[in-house]
Length: 543
Image (cartoon, rainbow, N blue to C red; front, side):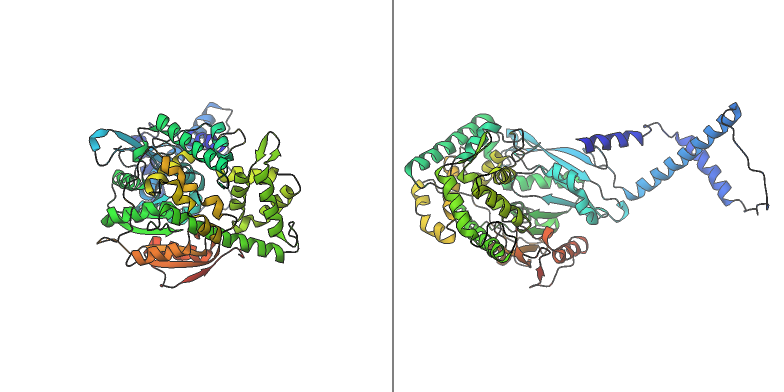
C-alpha cells in the first residue's frame, strides 16, 4: 500500500495537468530555441562580469520565472516527443491505472456455448512496451492455479520481465473465478481454518466420514454463494477469455509464458487459436492425459523423491539440526501430531498442516528452514512449522487468506473428471503407499472432494497440435515434484514440433532456478530462436 501511495504521489507531482503546456506557446518556444541553437557560435571574451539575477527585485523575479517556464516547456515538449516514440499508445477500452500500468475490464460471455446467457468481466493489467517503434506484441503471463492474482503479480514483479518489456507489452490477468474476475468465494477465514484441519489421511472410519462431510459442506457453501459462476470457471473458458484480451489490444497474435497449472491454459489456447499464437513457453508442464487420481499418484512419487534428497542432504550436512537420522525424527513427529495435534498458542498444528509445511519446505532453497522447523517441532515447539503451513495455504496473520482455495477447487473439479465412488479411492491405497509412504496416504483421497462438487466437468482437454501453431518450448526439471518430468516428456510427444528443454535438479519450475534456462527462454521469446533438442541445463542452486 505504501509503495502504491508513493507511486500515485509521484505521478501527480510530475503531471502538471491536461492543459499544460499550451501547444502554441510550446511551438513558439521550441522555434526560438531552435533559432538560438542554429545561430553561429561566438567566442566568449576572456573575462566578463557575471550577470546576477536578484530575485528580490521585480525584474529579477520576472526573468527567473520566465527562465523556469521556458525550461519546463522545453522539458515537457521533449517528454511528449520521447513518449510518442517509445511508449505504446493506450488501446481503446484500456485506461491508465497507476505508474506505467494500464488496466481493462474485458467483457466476455459467462457461458461460451450460450453467449446470450449473460456476461462477466475479466480484469487485466498491461505494462506497455517501452520501445513502441520496435514492439512485437504482448507477453501474457499464465500463472497456474488461481492462488495468486495475475494482476497483483505483474504489478509487484514486472521488474523480473524487464528484458522483454522494451519490445513486448507485459500482460497480467485474473482468470475467471478469481481475483477481480467474478471470483468464487465460499468460506470465511475461520471456516477455511476448520477445513484445513481435517486430515486427508483417512485411516479409520471416523476420519473418512469427517472428510466426506467437510467436502460436502464446502461444495454446498460454494453452490450457495457462487452458484452462477461455478459451472463456467473451466480452463477452456479461461483460454477463450485470454483471446478476448488479445483482441482488446488490437493484436493479431499473442506470446504466452505459462507456469505449472497455467500451462494447461496455454495448451488449450494453442489448440483453440493456433494462428493467434506467436510463441509460447510452458514451464512445469501439465499433462492433461492423466486422470485426477493418476496425477496425484505421480505427485506423491515426485515429493517422495524430493523428501529423500532433503534427508540425504541433511545426513551429509554437519549442521543439520535433525541429527544423523532425520527420517526417524520426521516420522516420529508426523505420528505424534496425527495422534494428538500440537498446541501452538491459540491454534493447533495438525497432521495435515504438518504435511503441508513439509511440502513447502521441500523446495531446495527452503531445506535449511525446514530442518530447523522440524527440529523445533520435535522438541515441542511447532510455531515455525505452523508458519510454514500458513505460507503454503496463504494464511495471513489476521486469519484471512491470500490464496483462493475455493477457486482452486472450482477450477480443478471442472478440468479433471474424478471418480465419484469412494471405493475407487480406497483401491488406490497400495499404489499410493508404494509411491510414497509419507505423501501417498495424504494424497489418496484429495480428488474425492470433486465427487460432491455441484458443477459437472466437461470432456478432458487434450493438447492437440493444430495447423499453423508455432513450435512450442517446453521446460521440465528432472526432479520437479509438482510438475513431473515424465509429464513434460509426454506432452512433448503429444505436441509435434515442440522442443523440450531440460533442467537437471530439484524444485518446482525452472525459469527462476537456472540461468541457462533463462538464456534459452529469453532468446526464444524475443527472437524465436529455439534451443537445440536435447539441451540440458544445470540448476543455479546446488540441488
